[in-house]
Length: 147
Image (cartoon, one colour):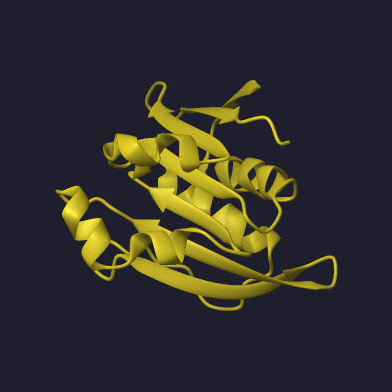
């Protein structure tokens, strides 16, 4: 299933991400992809907003990943946010224990996750963000069917 949205502002991107996040559940793994500056961090902020994460979200480009704690409908939620921009080889993912952090009873969002094709089938949804004019962003979400 694929859906498309055109955002006119960072606020609209975050609002669309909040709606998307409200459909997620523990165990979901999201691949965020798009050019630098396409709005991946804004989208991630919307996801964190949906889950009432109290920690201020920052892009984990230098730390590789951050873990946020929040809640949704009274239930605790752990949100893991990865940024693989600086990872070059699959062996580096192995060295940091990526599999152990990616899979589990939490929601994982991986920026630049498409750089490693071997994980492509691991994602329950892929979110592609792209520049669509000077102040517009095109957001395309492709979801895998849930069994």
